[in-house]
Image 1 (cartoon, rainbow, N blue to C red):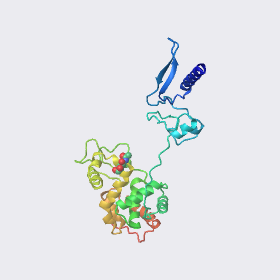
Image 2: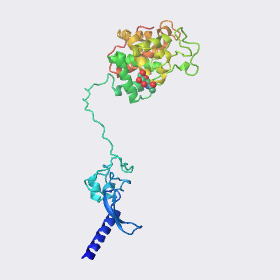
Image 3: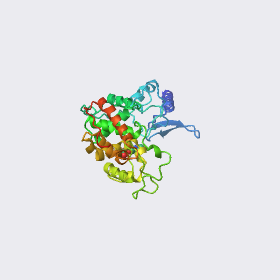
Length: 316
Ligand SMILES: *[C@@H]1O[C@H](CO)[C@@H](O)[C@H](O)[C@H]1NC(C)=O
């Protein structure tokens, strides 16, 4: 009887040792185990565990985890299914997230946007393209069409006739929306031209942008009109280097200096506002440049659907 109890006792002790050895490493629960000490050869109870359960190495994902892309941190349920952890065991929160498991991408926030009220541009892309090619210039990009339509608004233009006048001058000034620096000054910066007391040291105020803004006075006036500061006087190069500014200065000049003259319907008056001293009535180029502008206008206006007659007066 005593002997069989002893055997049972030893078997139980062995079982506990076996259990303590085979317990999966991620889970260490507190308890007591019998350990045979080498000094006296006797069995002694020893405590083990007692701290927070530790998961030193993240369990390698089993098939269920590997297939899953939506669980950056293995859930207790999954771990329980693998037999690694009892459901009630808390997960240590400092457990490193295995980098091999992809993080679920966040869904972008959806903003509910009212549909834009349909608004057709003053000049369609089709008409714009046709006008450009009829004037023997390259087919414009859709960005150029969008920029043109936007600039007509800033230029206070509301009719196809005035839009045709505007585009005729832009094409003449920029050689078909291809040049935003005055041709004669591209390489030299025209050091002897457009000099005035307003000039910022080292800056040149030759023609820039789609309507070829010139002179420090005009750069300053445009800057105040568009931005309420003097940035274009300080940095005139912005007008050619930034295409938004190239368009904005053209629109500003038209709205401030040409729009009222355009209302007369006489194309020559718009030319007089843009380059009158040089091209109208005794200007150095005679009327040739001014007549070329008018020819561009009469090419564009019918394509834009502007009603005639197309009046030439006001310049020569
Ligand atoms: C171009 O000018 C616009 C308008 O002034 C400005 O908002 C934009 O930041 C500028 N772009 C660059 C690249 O400087």
